[in-house]
Image (cartoon, rainbow, N blue to C red; front, side, top):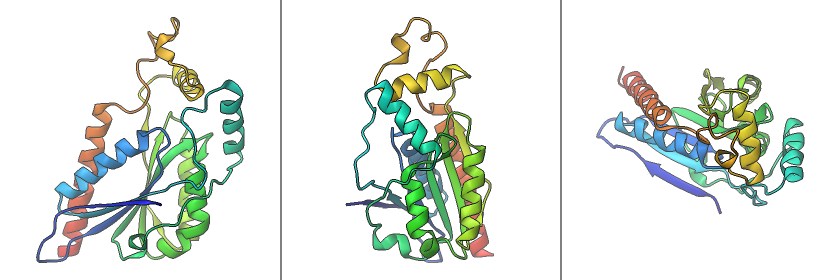
Amino acid sequence: MNTTETTGITSHGHVSRVLIIYYSFSRQTRKLVRAAEKGLASAGVEVTSERLIPVKHLKFPFGSFLKTLYMMIITFFRKRMPVSELSARAFQEYDLIIIAGPTWSFNPCGPVLSFLDTYCNDIFPGRRVLPIISCRRYWRYHGHYLKKRIRKCGGYPMEPWAFNHPVPAPWDTIGLFLTLMGRNPRRVAILKKFYTRYGHNNRQLHEMEKRAHDLGLQLQQQESA
């Protein structure tokens, strides 16, 4: 069963409403979403978050070299991963839709692809849609594909907000692969100097919160104009 969470500040006038639809495999997108929720709510926006839950559970980490390699190959070819039915709140009226998820092999992740196939024609038409992307650094094709699909569904895509894992190449790719295998890169002597962490840092989360706050103020000003 999917999880729906609502946060925000109400007032006697119209309050801008934002729907965040997201999938998070290793909790990195979830961190970004939580920061976005906080920033939007601090600007007086009502935020509803809808987490995409795969019908077939995806285990993190994958646990072996071959399983990790297999996932990287099938996601390169945009393997869909069906998601559970969305709640009724996802189909209400919103001033902005945010679609958030990680980049998998240059593409949107499988659960987000499944969402697009199943629901985007019901949720996106006539609405602005902001993609939020958690990635190493190879996100541009992901962003281009999302904008194309949003337009095809009748929505108005905004420029993606992409947040790279703050580790330089090629250590980010090596460290990610080991992490997905279930190994800790920081315990590998040659890597621990270069691969300092997995995932987003506090600076990025603060940046997300601020950007979301500023976006929320813009939405509120548009509604009051």
